[in-house]
Amino acid sequence: MRRADGLAVLTSAEMTQADRLAVAGGVTIDVLMHAAGAAVASALAARFPRGRILVLCGPGNNGGDGYVAARLLAARGRDVRVAALGPVADPGSAAARAASAWGGAVATLAPACLDGADVVVDALFGAGLRRDLDGMARATVEALAVRGMPVVAIDVPSGLDGDSGGARGCVAPAALTVTFFRLKPGHLLLPGRRLCGETLCAPIGIPEAVLATIMPRCWRNDPALWRDSLVAPRDDGHKFGRGHALIVGGAQLTGAARLAAQAALRAGAGLVTIACTAEAAPVYRASSDPAVMVEALAGDGDIDLALADPRRNVVLLGPGNGADAATRRRVASALRDGRPCVLDADALTAHAGAAETLFGAIRGPVVMTPHAGEFARLFAPGSDKLDSARRAAARSGAVVLLKGADTVIAAPDGRAAINANAPPDLATAGSGDVLAGTIAGLLAQGMPAFEAAAAGAWLHGEAGRAAGAGLVAGDLAGRYPAVLARLREGR
Image (cartoon, rainbow, N blue to C red; front, side):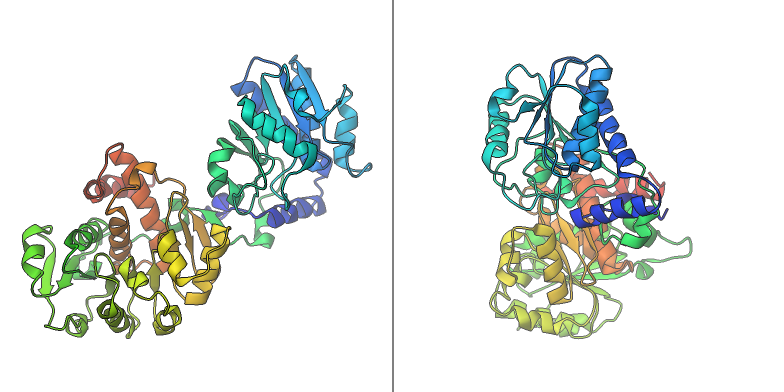
């Protein structure tokens, strides 16, 4: 198995394909369903060893998993009841056989069936639901949400779109979600990640080899996805071999570029220069990290002279720059010769209404790092964050890192990664500037754009977790050495 295969995230359609390929390879749906139900029963028994269990079963395979779990939990001596939305849709299916094997009473699904239960297994609908919950299913799920009793969801909580992580009508939050073979995007994207609670991905007998046919293009962001591209310093190396990041600093909000510069250094760039107006240069020289060089631009703020040195192999523009025509001109200059660029904050906002001009100027590797507001100024955002980021990357020709607690990194060729390690403490002023500088530092060392963006997001998240409660943006880069040391040790 390739290193990244364990990180693959499958859409609902890809998961259906995985089931079909497993069956074509000789694994029956009955075997897969029994393994799924057994995984649910074991997980529930471990986390909720006492109490009366109610299993809510839908008409499809998700309900079939629920019937198996009910039977196995009853065989363990647990007090188990089943309530069903209706008969299994296909009388000849594995789900129908699982319902028959249950053998016990089946109540009609209704909010009143929740009475007397201590823990509920939600086996109504899985990740492939493509409509809002309605009727008695919705009424029961709404009642379940109001009562707040522990829920163990099979695949996803009913009403959760497995591909977007959005709620379809209503969702009862789960304490535990048991899914199978691989995670779905909805397990990682918000609000799905929060609604799923603890998520357990259980093997059920689908051969790993099916991934070679499916060829997934989305992964959970993790070092296994990009560690091979991470550049370690050479014994015979020198600072110029580790790249030189040029960061364009603004005249007013100087903290943004200073935070970015420190992060670029800590991420491994050999040299970092802040280019700024002559009037701002004394501020940068007095307050930046001593290792950061400061270069005063010509009177009109043109950066062409600063770009003349080819050893300055990556440019970061945007943090604190101002959303104006001067920033647009600097972006055009930086993109002209195709050297790698990171465009953040004002470099993006300055092109509101002129997105195609920006996209048309891209010649080489570019990483854009918008938050939701900046993204909306350049693109047409949708309800599906993963799909929106992918469309934006394809349209712009840049790697798009759409920030948030569920940051999505998307490449123009369709590859995507979902980052899930960022703590809420990162929602603080300057945090995005640190992230942009981190990516610039990784690009300066020669990492490809998609891998640098994914690595930067993960490193940023790990630093935030290490800094903990009360962190400010200036704390983050100082945490990088310990995180990078763990990466080099392979942990």
